[in-house]
Length: 420
Ligand code: NAI
Image (cartoon, rainbow, N blue to C red; front, side, top):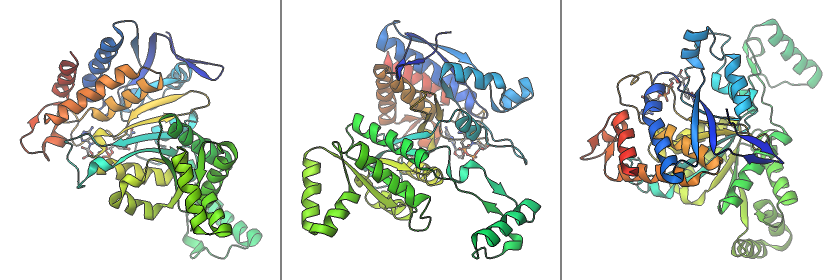
């Protein structure tokens, strides 16, 4: 196997790269079958055999359970740990107490702290907006902390009652309205966790010549968790990115000392000098703003739960989860899992109706991650071409006038033809 490695903090990518993949459950096998040939063809067209991917199948979810009696075999984790990289389809979350989401387990075990979701519009995709083309953002969602840490205590259990007593007796907490019947959840948000995520967002924005990074938070209510996410973000930008960033925290300081006009002038100068602007917005306002003025936002950094809501809301603006890709990345260790952002879609599984674009665009993110942009560019051009011609899968065809309906496999075959 020739896996990705890291030397002196740099990714080392072999030309014959082995990539583990998980087909996933439900529509997973269909979208994988349709996508594999597209990815291989794009790499061949870009590099004429000099670079190739050897796909190594690994198992998780229902298929793993049927084969090995466990939803997440140790071997799967060990292979990803060795390979550092994986592409994955959707996994069903086993229902029942005691099961954690497999996706959350993978993200936490491998400490994949950034969930990266680019959201852009492909011309012709049915959208509820008048101007969906104005939405072009990349979301950096913190992936390991917040209420997703899974620290919860069920109402009525002895440990919950004990915890509530400690809060009352030792910390003077009087605000639990119904202590006898309250469940308790704990929301850890750390300085390290916040700053490594925000640094990744800033680095991405700088490398891709983006204009701003917006810290989306609910700090007006959760002052020490989300409020400090914002504070730690601004502090990081002011301490470590002084030459290349200008923060709205600095703007406010200047406005207070020298007046608004002076602050505005400094901001204008920073923009003229091409500095990255770091700003913030409260999460509920953000959800209004992305509908009213999406063009004001560019790269987004946010805590885990906000990121969950925001990712799906923004995906819907540009055509839904069938076309929204995602990557879970630890920029320090190099580990990365790229994945279709939708679920297993049991309502359409096995019917050839699934749109493979989410998986394909996630593969494009993976190709970009390893520096094979010439291949990802070909896939994106083919997708753009297919959608422009209204040759699409049923999710889009339903909402387009005079569309040609293709099955999942036919859509994949069309993309291959378009690259020939
Ligand atoms: P879902 O994303 O599977 O489906 C929601 C709706 O979107 C359905 O109507 C489905 O038909 C449609 N849809 C999803 N992907 C599509 C595609 N590629 N093309 C066309 N239409 C598509 O969400 P749901 O129903 O809440 O979850 C089903 C299962 O998937 C659950 O077990 C859940 O835990 C799991 N899940 C897994 C995820 C992952 O592995 N990353 C993410 C979300 C859910």
